[in-house]
Image (cartoon, rainbow, N blue to C red):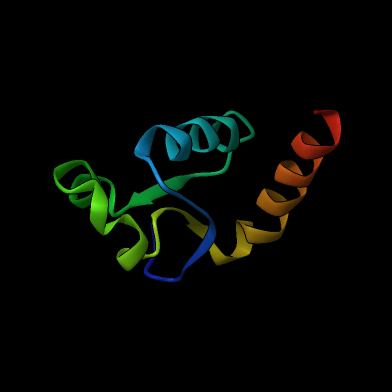
Length: 75
């Protein structure tokens, strides 16, 4: 992955971030989870860090947003 990453979502817990990660990776979008280990070590820091973040390449951000919107519409 390049250094040009875009945050598509952030969550209070790592498990929520990994659910989205697997959904996006199933669609062929590579993802990175940031802050996971810090939040696992001290969950109270989640808000201070901006949550557990799902990051994608900037060029995949729009497609990731479309996938997430599509998931919201089906619920």
